[in-house]
Amino acid sequence: KQEVTQIPAALSVPEGENLVLNCSFTDSAIYNLQWFRQDPGKGLTSLLLIQSSQREQTSGRLNASLDKSSGRSTLYIAASQPGDSATYLCAKTTRNNDMRFGAGTRLTVKP
Amino acid sequence: DAGVIQSPRHEVTEMGQEVTLRCKPISGHNSLFWYRQTMMRGLELLIYFNNNVPIDDSGMPEDRFSAKMPNASFSTLKIQPSEPRDSAVYFCASNRGSERTEAFFGQGTRLTVV
Image (cartoon, rainbow over all chains, first blue to last red; front, side, top):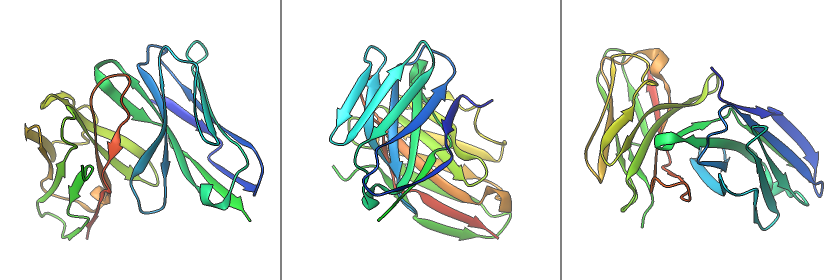
């Protein structure tokens, strides 16, 4: 069963473009929703965490939103740069601290 | 803190051999997770512990896989006997176990079973 779904699987954009990555999940009884970045051959790095009581979080050029009722989260990246190229994964955490991931979106930002 | 530490970084072993992966979580974190990542299946949750107690091991693929957390600063994931289809990157992660806390990942162990 696919609890967390990410669309698109891959995305290629020119430098400077604003973009949105999507994450949908089953079970609205979440504790939090996290967005991670993974560079090739590396571990995951947490970018943003949205608690269940929050609607969005911002860090620099990144903004993440959460809509529990519809089971959706988005990650907005403003003014994309080649250094943003990576795989972005979202994870939902539910009761007992159970944390499950989507398959990720592989982003390429072309100079 | 040095972050989540996993060892070894790379492991190549022959089919049928026992493999033990190790993880040291961040000090003060009371939850620890083991994941397996492959191209085909993505990042799969194998097992996680809260306060050293296994909470959900439904992701462990077979009885060949076992995990232990004897204390708050150490966990192992063991595969016995190993098979080629176990080849993957295995990640360990930890957090403080509350809704406010982000998870931190180790660099992973790349396992190749030949």
